[in-house]
Structures are given as C-alpha cells and as structure tokens.
Image 1 (spheres, helix red, strand yellow):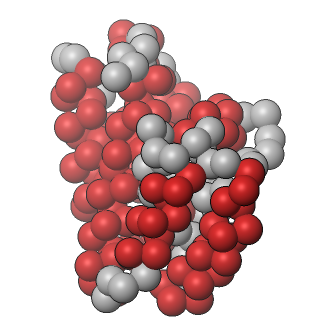
Image 2 (cartoon, helix red, strand yellow; image 1 turned 30 degrees about the vertical axis):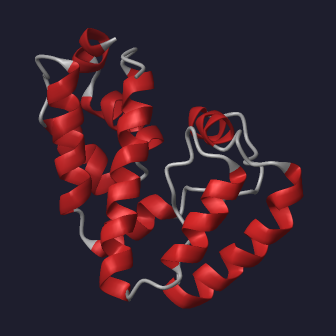
Length: 163
C-alpha cells in the first residue's frame, strides 16, 4: 500500500524502488520525494525521474533486465515480475528472439527492453526487428519510454494499485 511505502525508511523505500527500476539515481530521487498523496503522484514522479536519468543510469537499470525470451532466474521480486511480464513468449520463438537479441546488442550495446506485459512473443519479436532500424537517438528515447512503462507497472504492484 502507498501508506506503507511512504512510511518506510529511506533505505527500505530505495530497496523497493530498485525492484521497479534498478537505477540508484532513480531510487534515491523517488524515495526522497515522499510522501506521495496518491498513487498517481508517485507514478508521475517516477515517470519523470526515469525520463530525466543520465544515460549511464539508464544502462544501470537495463543491466537488471533479462533478455526477452530468456527465463529469468532467481527468487527475488524483480525476477518474479520479469517472469510474469514475459509470460507471452512461446517456446517456438525463443531461438528467433535470441538471434534478435544478439543483433540488437551488437547494434546498440545493451539489452533490448520492451514492456512485455500483454504482448505475445511474436509481437515482442516484431518490435525488436522494427527497432533495429532506429538510429541511436531514437532508440534511446524508445528505451526510456519502455523503462518508464515497466517501472509504472512494477510500482503499481508495489503499492497495490494494479492496472
């Protein structure tokens, strides 16, 4: 609940926020802006914080995301959320996604990030292939938007405001 999140110590709030977006700059900023009057204010502050991150901070957040199509391991909250978010990936598409991930990482130097919730594996693969045509500036804008969308979904789970 939001009241519980607002009442946490700064370190506890930052730990919760890191499960939503694994950038220390993001977690510190959003935690420092507490208390939030309602979930929408939290979501708005988090979205703005993601969009304002330095690119190195975005890369820090990306390092916590598994490749699309790979089954995330681990027992933590973030791994569990990643498994839920990628539940639309069919086993038959895993090889094509692995190939697409390699091409994407060679082109852009980081993991392909997409807000996978509600998408099929075929839709994720189509978006990956489309984004391979982006220039660096356009792709960075898309990555930030996808990171903001994932962060919002995870924050909504964190504070019990599921969409």
